[in-house]
Every structure is written in C-alpha cells, then in structure tokens.
Image 1 (cartoon, rainbow, N blue to C red):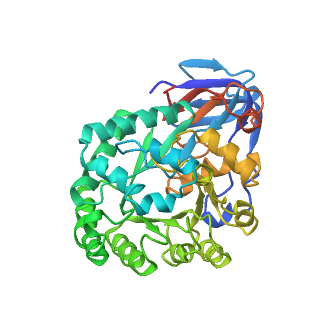
Image 2 (spheres, rainbow, N blue to C red; image 1 turned 90 degrees about the vertical axis):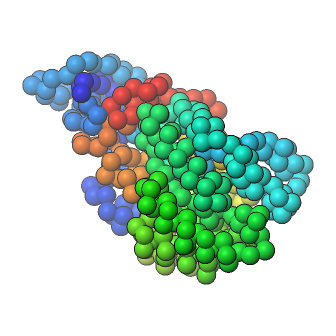
Image 3 (spheres, helix red, strand yellow; image 1 turned 135 degrees about the horizontal axis):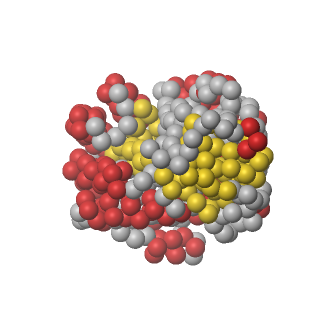
Length: 413
C-alpha cells in the first residue's frame, strides 16, 4: 500500500496512554499527548510518529503532505447510533417543541414504534441507503468508526433486514462499521399485551438466528420504565452472552431504574445514556470496567437533564461520548456538535471530550487496539482540522473544522 508522510503538523493530538487496560486510563482524560511540528508516516496503519526534525532519512514514502498550520486528531469513534431506519418523525419533534412529552408520544404509538412501522414496509436496499447517507455525513464531520444498531424491526424478519442493511453499509462506505443487535429496543405492538412471549422470542429465536448468521457483534437492550424490566433484561443479556455476544445497555435514560447497577453486574462493555444514573450504579460500573457512554445530543433534543459527566469522571469512570444519531430523539451524525454540548452543558473539558470521543469510544466498542488514538501499528484513522489549535473545535462552534478525513490510510473526505 502507498505510504504517506505528513510533516510540519502544527499540533498532533495523539490521545495515547502508556497502557490501554481499562483500569489504567480512568483518571487520565485530560492527557492528550500533544506533539508540535510533528510528522507521521503511514500506510493503512501508522508506521512512524514523532517530530518533523527527527524523521529518519532511511524511511521511504510515496507522497508527502505539508500540514503547516493544521491540527491532526484521531478520527472520531461514534460508539452509539441508530443510523439504519426508515420513515420520518419530524412531526413528533415539532409536537415536543409544543410541550408534548416523549413518553406521551410513545404511549400514543409514536416514538420507536412509529419507526418500526416504516421499517417493516421498507426494503433492505432502502434501509441501507439511509445508513449510507448518514455514514457519509458522519465522515464529513470526522467520524472514522461508527456503531450501528438494529432495533426498529422488532421481529426476526425485520431485525435481520436491518442487520443485513448495516452489512451493506459496511461494504459500501470507506470507514469502519460495527453492528449491534437491539431487538430489545421496545415491545412490538403485536406483543404489547404479552411481553413475556416476546422476551422468549428474543431468547429462543432471534438471538440464535442472528448469531448463526454472524450479523452483529453486540447485543443491546433498553432497560428503563416502560421498556424492559431488570429481570427480563438479565435473562436476555445472559442468553446473549452465552451465545458470544458482547453486551451493551440503554440504561437509566428516563428514570433512575437501576439499569446501570445491572449493567455493572452483567459486566456489560458499556451502559449508555445514564441521565438518571445513581451513585450505586456508578460504583457498579466502575468496579466492572463498564464504559459510561454519554449522549448529550439526546438530552438536548428531548430537553432532559444531562448525564452527570463531572461526577462520573471525578469518581474514575471511563466516559465516552457518542451521537445517538436516530430518527426520533437525536437526528445528527455530527460528533463535533456532541463535543460542544458535552463541554458547555455537561461540564467536560475540551481535552476530556476529545478523549471520550476517540479512545474511550473505541473502548466502548472493544476496538481500542485498532483505533481511537494515533499510535504505531494502529489503523491510520485521523482527521485534519483547518485550525492552528485544537480548542477551536469547541470554541468556534457551529462550523465544520474538518478539512480532511482519513480512514484506514485512505483519504475519504
């Protein structure tokens, strides 16, 4: 593969730590490992990193790019999205602005179930087209790894369609796509009065079929008031784990439900949302090494309280940031916007937000050995900012600072 040399980089933000063990990076979110007047040699992976003055003359390359006055960051890792769906819920957004609550809309058959209806009437190709469009938009804003969930089908056939659509997106877009099965996103209307039967369907039919076809790496579940109980969530997650799925939980988004405590007890890779996470939940997650994935775009859109990011960081949890891009409660693939919300409304420093949206996002996808930081032998995923200083990505908000996006050694934007 062609080798490229970046030289004269004004600021190289590496986001590295000496060790990547989950217990070794908790309190180091402000340590970005910054190099000035730096250089990088890479193919599909980073091969040499250091100062421009120290670049070894014996190393060869095929092209050189002068990065004077530019900032280089790791590509964003968006570890929580629902980018494959059908339909439109802009009418619900307008109703919420007029004062109607998310839970009321859901009780009327809107919310997730409105998208379920649209998905069940869409083809795999139509679903994939939406996912590809959002993935390309995410790339423009600097995302190089993105997780995509199913969860808007709520039947074996429709969930398989969503996961097959995600697989098409993976093959068509030049960034890393990681898939998650979320048949436990809600209860479908045909099982609204027989929830236990749907739980049995998830355990006995859906999970085994999806595992057999190799369509998802993770299993996620919405554990909260009105959705899946702690008991049912544990049954589903235990079954998923036994099949080899890695676990995630939509936890305590709407109420203090005890889902974070359960996520810790189940040793979930991440618990996400956490707007109403308790102190006990934080302790359980920290003990288990469960990543706290915070989604400030959803709190912003739904006008809810923000997750207690400062408390989590001060207590030593590993905090990640993601968009939660979805058709109902946060319709954006823009990670730069998420950093701005995290700093302004959740009290995170710019350095913490960058770490949370790169290395810690990779941890939330068990991909920290592949991406999330600029280190030798990791995938050459990075973004070039048209700015002299990295704080501009939050300070000068509302604009796209990404001049170029590179994924796996290829310039994709």
